[in-house]
Length: 610
Ligand SMILES: *[C@@H]1O[C@H](CO)[C@@H](O)[C@H](O)[C@H]1NC(C)=O
Ligand SMILES: *[C@@H]1O[C@H](CO)[C@@H](O)[C@H](O)[C@H]1NC(C)=O
Ligand SMILES: *[C@@H]1O[C@H](CO)[C@@H](O)[C@H](O)[C@H]1NC(C)=O
Ligand SMILES: *[C@@H]1O[C@H](CO)[C@@H](O)[C@H](O)[C@H]1NC(C)=O
Ligand SMILES: *[C@@H]1O[C@H](CO)[C@@H](O)[C@H](O)[C@H]1NC(C)=O
Ligand SMILES: *[C@@H]1O[C@H](CO)[C@@H](O)[C@H](O)[C@H]1NC(C)=O
Ligand SMILES: *[C@@H]1O[C@H](CO)[C@@H](O)[C@H](O)[C@H]1NC(C)=O
Ligand SMILES: CC(=O)N[C@H]1CO[C@H](CO)[C@@H](O)[C@@H]1O
Image (cartoon, rainbow, N blue to C red; front, side, top):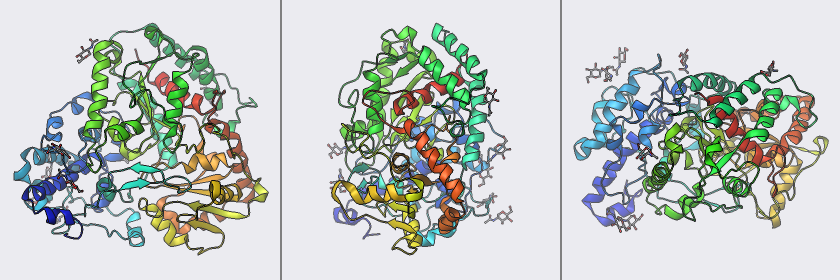
């Protein structure tokens, strides 16, 4: 352990050791609540069957406001502790009472808070003791290729009751570091608490795209049913209800030359909904909030989609209204990137102050105006691209519509409420369209291409171990590409490969998905449980390939099994869907700005209940 945490020993501080212990207990606790799935990969015999159903549903208020909360917000020093995220209680699988509720979950709620309340008492052995007894301990090997077997769903061990530290072998706390990643592997700093990262391994329970669609359909019905009625009904509510009826009864219209039907779940519905949005949508943008966290759009880099959206909506005069009583939606103009850059204490691994900031903002506007309280924020929305945004916003924005880049089924993404925000890597904010496009289908000699930081997340080492180092001349799978002027190499590969591999990094999202589309390359998404952008309206499987992480060894076989005809069809569709993924300094019909706005509108319309 000493080589893992040299500074601990140097400091010779019992207090630090104690904190470390507490930290670990908290990690375990936190993980247990936060990532019901990843705990099952950490201790791979512990499978929590309830999670899939529950993570994608909205929790009932009682649960959220239960007395878990104080227990999960410990008051001890945060210095050098770890990722202590007071959004944790909300992360607790928010669920409707479901028949699938397992004893595992019940134990977790009963045990974990006690552990953190009692603090020292619960610490000896670093184990939340009540949980440990019958659990089977299995800490997967950290080595990537060896981690592969655990990709396969392991049989459920019903005895395993929860997280337990293997004796004398707690998962190591890596030294804090920053995260760098971008489509072309150029140095863009991402801040990520590596402690949490270490817990993220592949998860045996994977939600396929068709299961996601099913969940979306179910939630469209159930969210609407369980939605809290607004405290009073307004004219915009009634307008939304009318819009909903109109959209549901959309006339069949699949011949619009601008909307190629196979790209959409239901082109008639999308078309009608978009028209209704154009016709009636009014958005109120809060003026409150200090720069730089609020009202400061960043237009370059990998988080720029939140910035572009903020800039374009704040300067928009078609959809934005100054009269909040006319608004169907309320936009919360904060930047998750600026929030981290401004408030995150380096190496603190704590989000608490970030979450606090957002909470204070909500408190402020909910006292000053009646709008938030009227719907508990259900008609409020945010667009946030930073990796941490899901956890920062999970608790206090649990009713609000969150457009998130890190749209991970297992990080509390709620189908039908939240929307998947495209992650875009804008290299030149003045010319967001430069270098767009690529070779035609017949002029793409390479089967597949990937390049990116090799050590980000658990998937890439696996990908590289199977296909890196030119193991197969058809698959160009690289770690970092040698630097070239203007990223020529990277762009060249994207423009001349048939398939562009979008392998997840630390988180499910990657700028490569939009990049592939941008360069007319068919995206191959290897990122289990990633909800692709505009999932509510687009039929992703018509123009992209989804490969389970566990199928990486079969990657070539999978790609080779796609016929040339099918490939050409998908590539043509990629070109047709491209317009939805473009930024324009002056927004254009159906472009990314409008699609983001539409995704929020669409979810609001279908959740409306009065
Ligand atoms: C989810 O719950 C339903 C019943 O509500 C059940 O039929 C289904 O098998 C459950 N799915 C999972 C993955 O637990
Ligand atoms: C945490 O560390 C900062 C300096 O890094 C110090 O100012 C602060 O008082 C510390 N907080 C506690 C609770 O120890
Ligand atoms: C926190 O840890 C860093 C090393 O990671 C150390 O330099 C710093 O002094 C520590 N701060 C406290 C308050 O213990
Ligand atoms: C767990 O172990 C305790 C004793 O250590 C025993 O009383 C209890 O029945 C066991 N529970 C299960 C589910 O095996
Ligand atoms: C696991 O459960 C089975 C029956 O459910 C029981 O026979 C077995 O002893 C249990 N194992 C442990 C370690 O508790
Ligand atoms: C699309 O939605 C419309 C309106 O609800 C419906 O009439 C039509 O059958 C749907 N089309 C498809 C292909 O599902
Ligand atoms: C909204 O609710 C909060 C908490 O319940 C309360 O403090 C606040 O005064 C309310 N706002 C308005 C405008 O009534
Ligand atoms: C609510 C509760 O305590 N559920 C179960 C927790 O796990 C033990 C076994 O470890 C069961 O006996 C409880 O029923």
